[in-house]
Image (cartoon, rainbow, N blue to C red; front, top):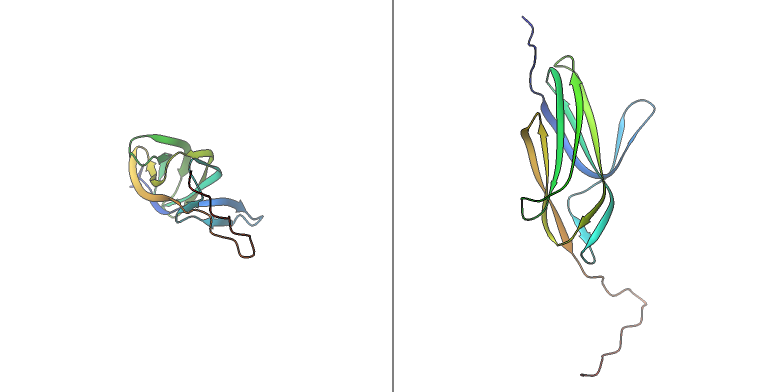
Length: 147
């Protein structure tokens, strides 16, 4: 007896700057993101990619990606893609592009990965404000007199 439908396992999920595909079909993941360091907020990310690879499932599925704000309620971006795994020994690779994402505040944002409304993974994406450092060779600003 053959299984009609088996929910797949999420083999990997990476937030990155870009994903490219070679002519061989292999993927190149560019700039894996652990956290986003910025000089100030608000800031807009031109493009973020979520690279997901599914395996060990059988059937047709809907992958959902959500970018959640630090309040853990607000959904900043979401994306859905349908995919199929005809056999359990096959893989499916999905890339979701999140364009023009505005981060209004510093804090911990979250990526949520679901398949058919079942949460498979939730991971943090800290936005850290780091003021620009003094550049070597640059002239320091003279102290301002008190007002």
